[in-house]
Amino acid sequence: MNLTLDMLPDRAVVRIDEPRLDAAMALSFKERMREIVAQAPGLVQVDMAQVQFMDSSGLGALIAIHKALPGGTRMALSSVHANVMRVLRLTRMDTVFTIVERPEAAAAGTQGDDEAAQAPGRAPAPVAARDTAPEAAAAQAAGGAS
Amino acid sequence: MTEAALGVRAPEPAAAEALFNRVLPADHLSVRGALTDLHARLSPHVSADVMGRLELVLAEVMNNIVRHGADAARRDGPVRPRRIHLSAACHRNGVACAVTDDGIGLPPACLVAPPSPAHPAGEPLPEGGFGWLIIHGLTRSLVYFREDTRNLLAFNIPAMDEAEG
Image (cartoon, rainbow over the protein chains, first blue to last red):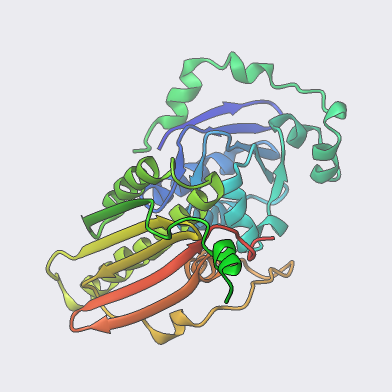
């Protein structure tokens, strides 16, 4: 399970560096993410751009993570692939999760994330730190996970 | 039926355009491997949309076999290694699939399409039970029977998806 974690002052940015969120890795994903959301400052932004496939086990892990969010912490999924969106839609979980088109939109949203997603021009796009994240962050994210 | 009507109905032969067959042990990593190979083999022959639905349904079907086999092993003690046989044939109207296994029989309730879930605010969200919802939502002509010690599940993934719209 490869995750890249970037802990910013106002949010945790988690990039899933896996093409598949499936039954073979749902458990390790869930355990690793539970640790991350417990320490996240207010917003957990999950970048799913690399996830091209998710089954109901992967969905179950996402739901468990959502339920494990501490009070006051939000989670947003960004760059959701059509195959992943299909699972969310079929199970009506698209009505439960906050889904934004681009990572910046999640951080820009104050009241409603949907509004931010539809108005990307308003997003300040403060994600430069993600590209320059030290490798230590990646190592930290991957640490302890198989 | 006139010749013209026949021509409209069958502009080209209905023979399978591509096949994928695999026998695999019932475990999650083998399922992933089979799906990855299936993707490589069949994606040149079907649209990305059909491929996505095909892969998802097969994942749900085979994950169920793996999971319920593990449940049975916990209840009844170790059982002999189980095998899944997977066949998929691309044809003009979609992909025809058959999945057989030598695990326990399918509960009849699985064969009834579940209602579309609602998730009212304030109620705890379910973390599972979505597999059959996905299978019923994306397949056509779903049939199941058990013969001796084997289960057989067959279905079609339609080329045009009217369920998702």
